[in-house]
Length: 266
Image (cartoon, rainbow, N blue to C red; front, side, top):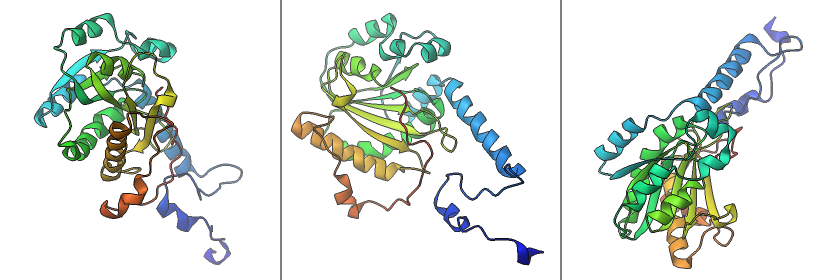
């Protein structure tokens, strides 16, 4: 009977991607195994959106790695408001704003913000390994405290960076989950952050996770953009990522096709 089975020419490509190809067919539908796998991935993506960030554990992990940390919350009081009112996730709560304003004004070259965004899984799994990979490259930078932000959108980093007098703010935030990546982290850089910055003033590095853009390569790209942002005094459309030209000194990363390279925490 096996002599009559037609080999799927796509099968050989499955080793290179998590995308759903060469799944087979049972009549006019999918076989049971890939259908169940699809349903599981869909459930994991939904869980990622609604799962709360365990900020206490994240602060403990940051302190264990020698980072000072601060805790803030957006104006969205809970997850329901966060999902329904994106504008509330883009500004600090009054209590968090007051906390940051009370800190002594010491200028920082860069402030990192870890935000839950649309995937707390991404923030809790990817942010600290990324910081461990990039901070040794920033020995001559004054790095401010790492800010852990709950119910956060990308623009929340602008207000945080402004209050902490940061030349550059780097938002590490959970991206919109896809069906093969419920824990994908996005990185957003903004020079001279302040309330009202537009997305055209930012640079973005997407799909940071071991199965996508791994930590050494993400750190390489982030260091490149930070260095040139400080040199040029800008980020956004005027700053181009040409870090690939320097990749000879960075471990190679296998190409991974992802169904969700769509940063969506704005």
